Amino acid sequence: MSLPQRDVSPLAGQLEQTLTAGRLPSEVSGWGSQLLRRLRQPVQVAVAGAAGSGKSALIDMLLGRVVIGRNGRGLLVDVCHGAQEMVEVETAAGERLQIPGLLAQMELPQDARRVRQTLPDPRLRWHSYRELPLSGPQAAQHEMLQQAASNADIILWCSQEFAADEQSLWATVPDSSKDHSFLVLTMADRQVMRGTLPALIETLEPIAAEEFLGVYPVAAIQGLTARTAEAPQDGLWRSSGGKQLAGDLQRQVDLGRASDVDQAELLIRQFGGSSLAETAPAVPAPAPAPANAAATKAASLAAALDQLQSGAEMMLAEAEAAGGPQAGPVLAQCMEMIRNLSQSLDAMPASAAVEAAREAAQDGEEMLMLCQLEQDEDAAVDAVTLLIQLKKELMEEPPG
Image 1 (cartoon, rainbow, N blue to C red):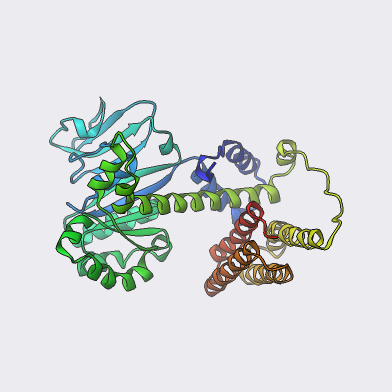
Image 2: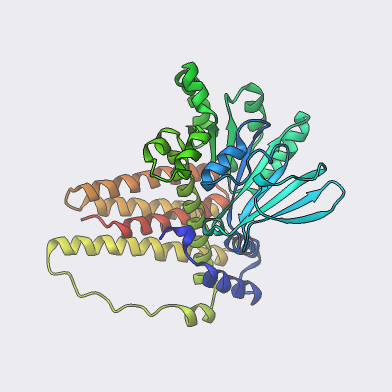
């Protein structure tokens, strides 16, 4: 089961109880409130781009059915979970109309300006979509994009060429949002027919390497055809570019939810008090002592991983005792812990699993180095979360 499908309601309830009881120190209560809000709503995926850039077709492809069709043009469209297929239309006059069915199959009022489509699709419990049309004066587009960046967890920027004017507009987006964004070259089949796609990708890759998670050429119509065909069309789904984008998008959703869960658990463990102890599962009995050298090394690794978890949980307490979060000491301690883990892995017999674990630890160390450049509270939180996620990853596929 993927992380977004995990029922986080008990965790959210524990965090709310911790907040309501006033157990969180003032310097982290805002962080806790934000985490609670994120846990109780889906990950929001904003699909942005100019008019005619293929936003609606892309969302339909990801949903696997025609939901928006051609009726989303020029409108702010939200697609989210609901008990039934229903369209709520907001007009320029402030009216709110509810119409059963799908947006793609209805006539909208002439003065419609915003639409909310609900679907009984279980996937939408974990992430929703927002189609964001960018049009009008550059200043208006900038304001809309900034607002979207502050609310969205992930952004898919749709474009056929990502020209200079789009690059200029995107450059104003905060780096924290760019770290969770994809450049989607829509209508890629047209570029393929013209023979221009390879050169376009080569031109954009250096830019995208700094501004996005990657470049994704997608032929959304072909992708939608593959997903709605009666017989499996995995080859077409793959060649359309849709399979790669959908998979990487889901992984980003998983990472975002995992980070929220890890941080919430960290706060509850540190400040939750007796309420957490009452609901915590029983601690399993300790394992018997290892009987051979391989088991001894495995136990050493387990101890190192446990140190990651316990050390992360201690950091908030130490920060509080010092009068507030201190980024420098936390980041230094995180770096020391991950280097200790690398030493434990180096002492283990060589194998494919051990090598993969070493690479994961090395990647984690590189990410911590980037965190150290920031030297602020957010960087410290990211560093602690990274250690917990690394422990979970290695425990799921232990080396040895």
